[in-house]
Length: 401
Image 1 (cartoon, rainbow, N blue to C red):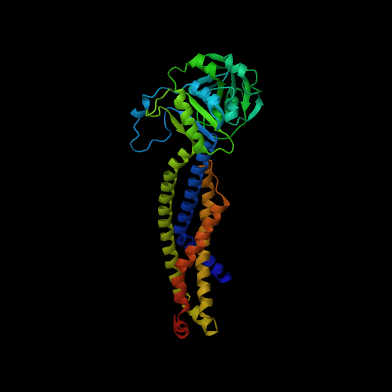
Image 2: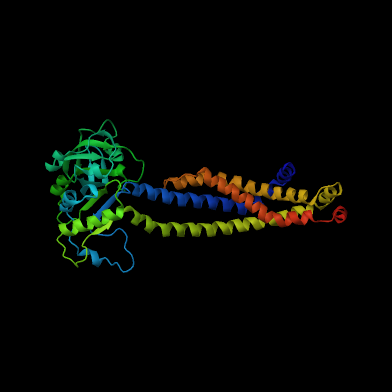
């Protein structure tokens, strides 16, 4: 090991130039892993709020497969809040169902504004279906919803933007010109950008207040039902299908005029995209690592040639083939590890740039993978030069000038 390190240190520039391909490969590997992990983590964060035990009854399917054309769905009658009421009254597999409707509108406080903000009309039983974490204040009550009171629960980022100084509770904001009083602030999730889907940028108002201000006549409501504990999702789907068909007065033989969506539908749709990105990344990084490995093999052949006399002396005083083989294999691995260290060093700032867009960090698992690849490349591409050195004849080696 010391001989290998000394040899690399003696030819520092040559070692760095030799490992340039390894450096590029390691940066590519870590970058690809960070991006794939970031996409997956970001997707998981986005759909986590959907709930694994929540079923969505909506007009449109979340994912359209082959043969599913938009005109098959556009003429469906809109989903209404009556569907949620029918489920609450008739379903045995669901603990609660709630109606939700949303839009995007400019929001203003006395001095600040957010354009646009996501406005969501929710019923009082919304927390029975989706977890609501409040940092301050309280969630709207049945009285607030039934009376269509102009009250609002705002996201953490909305609170920071509209009320940078002091608590927003009790203060007024304007949604498309109508005044609302802030009664609650949700816990900061730390995700998303302005106007995005994150709860940090969400404003929730009573369903009936939304109905009075924006009307739901031409809007399709999303009805969300929480499956009871111990009930299989598939069983709940089938029971809900019957309850909704009855509520919408569909006759036997008529097609469903609604869609039952769930989280797993989105998971299945993202899997091919993730695999495609991963496959392309593996192809590109493999090419870079192959070039780097060939460079290491080339320089190791040169090193063996330069040190032929040294090899002859070592063998003449009793060094075995395996000793010579290990010496040059270790040297090849050390060269690759130098490239790995530089590559990982460059990968950290790259991961920080990626993290500015995706919720991702360069994990220790990825770093370990990078160094593991370095050892593998060193062994595979260093084996041929090391074997050449190990099998050289001592007399011929001693004669070499």
